[in-house]
Length: 130
Image (cartoon, rainbow, N blue to C red):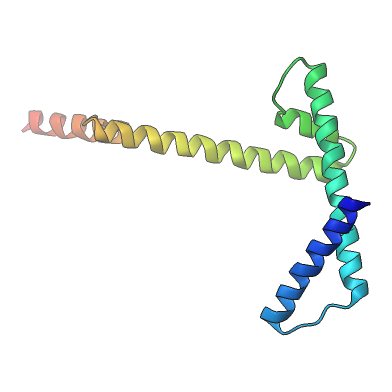
């Protein structure tokens, strides 16, 4: 109850700040509704954390993986599809970042990138033909 009251108080303070900045009004009912939704989301997040920890312990791991999240979302096709899509996007982004980092380090060391090596070979072959 004390935690719920603290959430309500904090939401009230945030709503007051928004009222001052944006020149809008929040009714007591809307503040109460926002507080209740916020509190429920926190409880849900805590429950999900517990579920993930149980999954990890069962698998004898200490890290939650995307496969754990997918396993939990498997009954909701749309959620599973969304999580899978985002997971793939993150993975491809991570690969691109690794490649960029690798290129930067090779350029800093004075090495040629594969494209530059190919251009140099082609240029060398052209000069040998002349």
